[in-house]
Length: 190
Length: 169
Image (tube, rainbow over all chains, first blue to last red; front, side, top):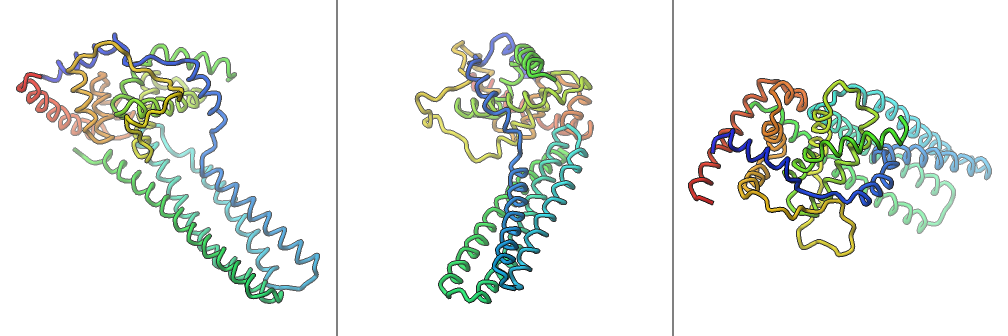
């Protein structure tokens, strides 16, 4: 067959729809999904900001209330609030950067890669952030004279969080790599 | 834009251009469950895209962009269904037409499905008669790159169709 013949076969399907649409189910789906415009990045950023601000304030208030003078906990509180501020600044930068991409498939892939790179970076930074937070928390518990078993449980909790952070980071890395392969295929001559 | 206006545009687009979406769904998803899944993703993206449509391109070009972008990313999701996964009672949006389809068209879709995600999108645009310039704009690559890819795809499809003719299927 020559290409024009393939095109004729292709065009013939326009007179013969491949599917029928269940319109009621379709509109129900749109109704249920139309409010889900928030991207996963949005949710994880907001979660990071809220958790860091909440924990930072909680640690600060408890420390002030107890008048324990535990320096590690003051530092921990400041660190968490600074982490929330950092995430907020990066979020603003990311949203401003969203306008730079054109609406072609290549532009959309570039945007998706940019979001994936941001996720890779922020997940790595937040994973590293667990280390100083864990160190300061453990130090605070130690200075506060807490029993060793509490210190060990908290240590285990941070170790698990660090492990889960690595798992999340690898998912983002894999996703970014797949998008880069797609863009490479699109840009390759031939 | 009010929701009523958005719904009106959506209905208009779907009535006039559903064949375009069906082609992309069939070219990118193999099983009926996957086709339904991809169709759902495309209509949701289409719905969300309506307020951003500035009439700088035709509706067909716009819908191709949205649908192909969605389909290409959808292929990377790790939740493909197999035919046997069908669960009774699940509400599907797409129902396969019971009309007899041309065997050659089925063969053509199978060949398109064998291509990678990017070549599949170029083949669909090519078969639907888009110019090099329009394809370059939809894909975001140069016209010369489009030309090189099309030559390769055309040669590949013609060579395979000759084998198909040869076996007289």
